[in-house]
Length: 236
Image (cartoon, rainbow, N blue to C red; front, side):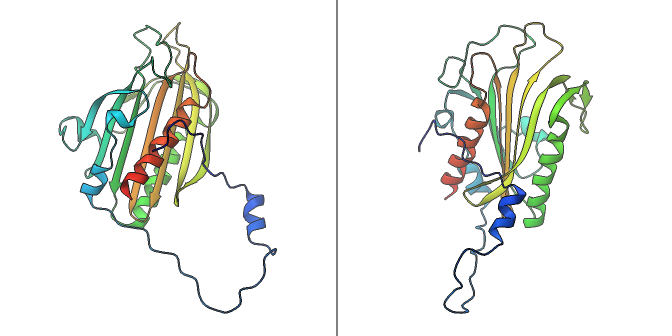
């Protein structure tokens, strides 16, 4: 598998969509209908088998949680989700010198997938991903918040964006932001990226959180892009 590749996600502006519907090509020679192959349906075991090992993640040092094996830790995920989290070595090519401050999170990535009830449910999962990231779109300055399940989201300020994305026939959203916390005087910021995709009844999400110190602005979204591409490739 190829590593270190740049992001190749497709943002479709309205102008391009309009042009795609206009002329410019010749009419087909016959009236033979064209069909689009139905998306493949994967079993939970296939989804689990495609999860990355630490060695599949650039800079990955160790796996933190693997679902469904780590049953207690996996209760935070919806039933039927397969997932893996991994820590990223700050000395790796995608890493940087970690700021030694208790308020600075450890660099990590997460990949999760789920066989949804049907294609509509998979599409709803992408809508949920967009909704979750909407508070981080544009300039933001958010107080500490509680999640529906009682978790805490730390206060943050920064700038982010959300775009539609298509990767290898899977469609969804890419959300990226640069974020700092008001809790830490030494916090040099985080680069955070989430790519959520669906195909048929399958949904997959890659989440990356990296310290911004000494990193390129696209480091997190580049890594997330590579993770979802490799996952889709392993699914076959």
